[in-house]
Image (cartoon, rainbow, N blue to C red; front, side, top):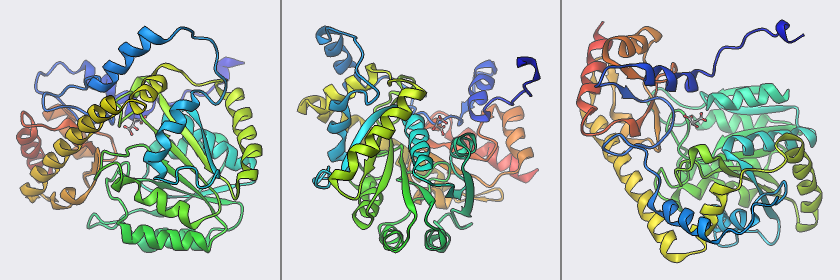
Length: 392
Ligand code: LMR
């Protein structure tokens, strides 16, 4: 039977990693998958993580099973950063550890479906895996345009989606550092989005995979906190893979806010059952390291400083791109106002291919670039290549 399976094309973003690795040109530039890179083009393990891992190796005396909810110490230690001082909303919020942000999104969508959701509204473009997960789970996807051509968010579109959404529908939004556009809602726009949710029967699903890589840990939490203050229930998918640099260790969590504390246990029991049937329990190591950091003031300080340095470097790169202004047919100024690892350049497929073939510059087929792939040593080459391919 297995030979009847139609072949699937490899995930385009992950395939790019291999294509880049196979390219032997020494001046190649990787603007593909979303990992942070230093000015030297490296993705080092955070110093705070190194410390926490050393402590973990020294102190961990068992690797016995935890359970589908994973490391609840990790789950709870993150909550003040995500939800603020009243992190549990009077006992209405609880979470469980998931294999990365992808596991969290998948669990969110699966539990929403179990609760009767049949369709999910989301802005496009979005992280390509959002649509894949919805499709795989069997939920209908309804899309609206996320942004204007001038590089700002299209508020009317998202408000329209929330206002027209019916009971049995969810609206999936990025918490911050929108992937792929880098175009976030302003605080004022989040206020309007929250007011619209307050009058809508739709279930908010918020995907927060880049907290701290935009404007700051607190600043980047504004959208999630504001929406949660306006609605009776919501799901928040969270990833530590970028803000702790844990990518391959798959460190994530799914949080649920219920109407009241009594409504939480049955929801959690469903999340547990879904997790058990999917991955049984999440991988421990990365989450345990994050827990150790967040329970130690010194390590927390080191982590926050490392995160701030990443943010500053990415802002510098954005500033340099914006300062280049008009490059060929492109206007790079809006990139200076966008947040996080990504922005999208309006390039044609041929131009993206020419960047790869003629200049060894690798980016997603959507024109998404990883801002952190640029640094003092390659940004001039990049801008020059953009000039060349857009003139062709
Ligand atoms: C990305 O968008 O590059 C990251 O979120 C990595 C991934 O899993 O796609």
